[in-house]
Length: 248
Image (cartoon, rainbow, N blue to C red; front, side, top):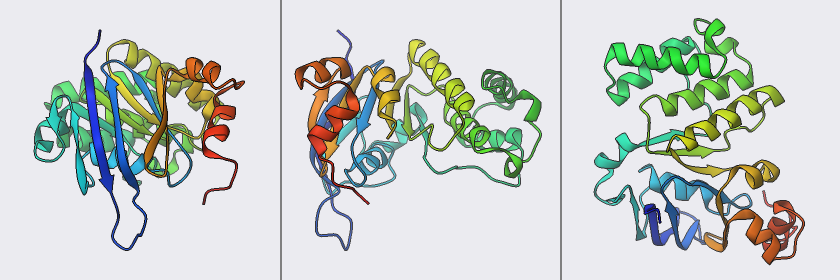
């Protein structure tokens, strides 16, 4: 049985000026090697949870551990073990793909020779070799998504956080991203993934948690939950558990 790589216990966070908490007693565990889908409507608390796990937001109460280290007082030990792929592009538009990745590799402290080899390998993996020296501002949305993803993979993280990694891109880029993510997972990278593409999540995730109002409303293997709830697919399950009211 695989050990947990992430443990979250009674996590709470209310942002200043808000009456309701964004995360309200959230508790869950993620096993090493999983592709774990953290799914829910807008405002459910998914991004806040990921930001807490990455050290970007401090919780008001509760505890979370990543790779055995506490997010409360051991973030310096966690940062080198995780990769973060945000929904918004974290790229310098006036720099080329290679220049952007050299910056990120420098932040991770990778030796220059190793970094250059890693960049070459990943650019080839994600079909970006021929455009490696083009400024990112001239890239398509799909190309930017792929560079954004490579930046989170450079240092071979044990845990990769993916916040909407395929939002707003063409079918080909989405295919390249998802197929390569599956390969990295098979090589041992644990993934924590959010998406509104529920068909994608249903086939990609080994385990999911549906989150609403800042807490987990159900958790398990996607197909098992679909059968248990007598629904046809993950989207139907999602609507059954979270309702059909529009969330803005």
